[in-house]
Length: 399
Image 1 (tube, rainbow, N blue to C red):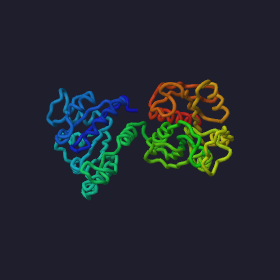
Image 2: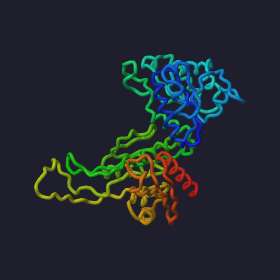
Image 3: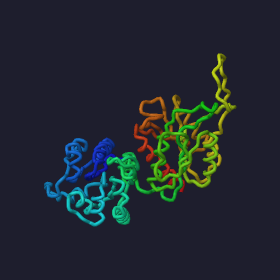
């Protein structure tokens, strides 16, 4: 999603300036083209050479530095698709809100013809100060974007809100601002994600290796494109994307109930969860003690959520997932036809770079009638948008 995007990063004089180096590195590795502007105060915390190496471009620090054939601050303001100020100190927020341009960064902000994203970071007392809050309110009213700071232990030793937001949240916001726009406004999307767990006794259960990353990526992409998004998830270590309505479940039966309860009110379902096919017939109320004889566990089938949705489908676009280790095309074609899906996202989880727990995936889109589109290896966040592109293409064909 970041490939080919132009981003100007403004670094101001706060202790969180060192985190901006990691942000630049992450954006660069994602394919973005970067220019970095540092204020004089920022250079007291991190040297420009650090950002020069990470961005691959010279760092801009001086308002009056000449650029051959152009005016520097205008070039830096009109070149990017997005300007990100990280960290954004109380000082730069106040200048921007007052329309002051007394250095290169604030002048670029004034001349910007693209969205500007502020990522505040400061002491909790400064952040909660009424003047700072007023300045942020003014900037929001003028259309500037924000990623709110996090809460925790600050560099000064106090606790509270003011630390730079997690870089994952900042990158997620950047991707949403640089994404395809809000082309899913007015739609309601339900996404299922993660594994389910099937209890054996109070301390043991059956589950699978799903991390939930693919489903959470789809939910995040859906929100960024303007859809009202419901995420129903089994147990994961992931934080739900900002803006989703979140329902946490454990078992396949709980997921079945949550999905069916909400199904009639949605336009799109992306069924990315790895739901257990079987559960123990009986669940012991006490921990099963180890014995010298073999233990047999009788399993019974869980309800097939995807098949049930296919039977009840009327207006909904229904997207399924299939994780296979062999006969990928054959098994996927049977599933897409047998479960009345609009298309299926299928992958061979034995391939390198695909499957559970990875940040990348290699999938094919399988359609009723046997049409197949093979996708290359890509980041799951990029794949999430590619899936939603396909959803919109299916909707257009149905009109």
